[in-house]
Amino acid sequence: MSANKPPFHADTLLAHGGGGFDQATGAVVPPIPVATTFVRDEDYALVSGDHLYSRDDNDLFRKTEALLATLENGVDSRLFSSGMAAIAAVARIIKPGGTLMAQSGIYWGTTLFLRQHCARNDIALVECDASDIDTLRDELAITKPDLVWLEVPSNPYLKVADISNVSDLCKSAGALLAVDATAATPLIMKPLTLGADLVMHAATKALNGHSDLLGGVVTTKDSTSDAWDFICTERKMAGAVMGSFEAWLLLRGLRTLSLRVERMNANAMALAEHLEAHPKIEKVLYPGLPSHKDYATARNQMTGGYGSLMSVQTQGGKDEALKVTGALKLFQRATSLGGTESLIEHRRSIEGETSGIPENLLRLSLGIEHIADLIADFDQALAKI
Image (cartoon, one colour):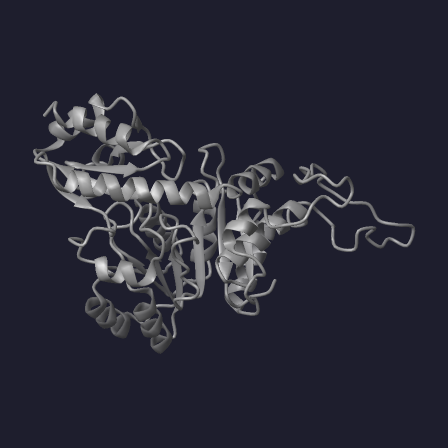
């Protein structure tokens, strides 16, 4: 796969599902390959030449991976069965006795997995506020990690680490830099261009955008590296592969990604501005607001929007926050992000009492509904407290 500039705008590539049509039938929608194995000729050579077993040999995988690599300005991608499977593959790059530095205050599922994985495998885990570049510089100098894991923007605090600066520090320390950019999508932020070695997305979220599949993807800017060779082998041999139907759904979802991202970003910005001025909202965490402490960094490395994820802290405590979620009629109370429908969740109820999450924090994922309806729904819910 080439890292050269593609011949068409990303919106055009997405609308055509990466381009081309089915050579066998002329269909504009690719078929779903269902075979698990492939025949050989009389001399025992593979008839297709490059199809041995569907765990790794799947034309729909390759088509979708090529499109995603192009969107990221990368050279190669690999699909996984879930976002967590993709995270696990990256984490396993580090051998026992090594060190992993992870951004603190990120998706709780990632944090728990990394803590458990490192404890089981004699890997030192250092958690650090990566949005504080001075703190990160000091930690890198002391711990000398093998891999640094960022989440930009972070979930649910919406912190925005400076990927370019972190990349420079990682290079000086001899560390790989991997970035989970799920909340941004490749359309508004490209970590590989900013200096990251690997970028990961939970394809479950905005890439698919319809809340009907699990998937993950990792993309590299160097397909010759030992790290990428490990990830490719891990996907093939450990078997954390996406199903053909899920890959078909993902490619279908990608066709509308640019339109969905445009509307979701606009909705998030408008609601963030509205809620920031609301007397019953204590704080809005959204990097598109000038009041956000990482606003300058976000503006510098994100284009066309700031994502559809935000968090708000209501006035009062847990009871008041739950009253708001309970009174909402349009926002659905569910765990995820990036779908066409707007979702809300009370993170303390999800993460538990020991995670340190504020009890009045609500995480919002903005969908593609009309913004006036979303604002009206939140206003009537806030009137209950």
